[in-house]
Amino acid sequence: MKIELFTFCDFAQDNGGKLTIVGTFDTIIAHNFPCTHPQLAVVIRIRFNIWEFTQHSFRIEIQSLHNMVRMDPISGTIDVKDAGNATTVSHLVFSVSNFRVPHEGIINFVLYIDDKEISSIPLYIRKGKKNG
Image 1 (cartoon, helix red, strand yellow):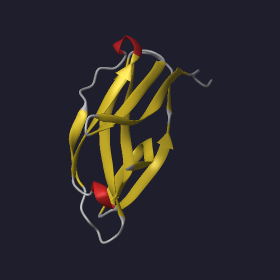
Image 2 (cartoon, one colour):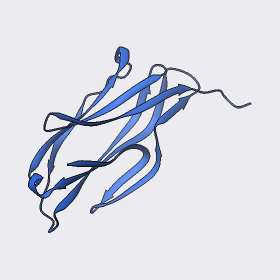
Image 3 (cartoon, one colour):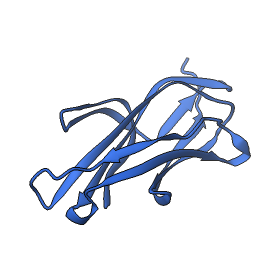
């Protein structure tokens, strides 16, 4: 399997295998802490080879120093089916509302497939200045 895309964005949708992604980013800038980011989506596109066409478990864990963010893992299964090609893709799209962050730092989103760590991406939380 190969991770073709793993990103944060403002909006994402899987519509019958066609993936729409709007506003990809890796940094949230807040003026004050704690802060709440109203909406973010986590998007993963995974390409599976023909010998991997079966059901797979997945889990996304949020890891940060000092338990900066507490969020239950996102988990489930992916049923990878033969689409008539040597490979096929599966999309994982999750929306997180009111993402609360107590202070600056780095939050890692870690993807596990069949209990094996496959990939991770950082989300940077920075303090910005107000204009004016």
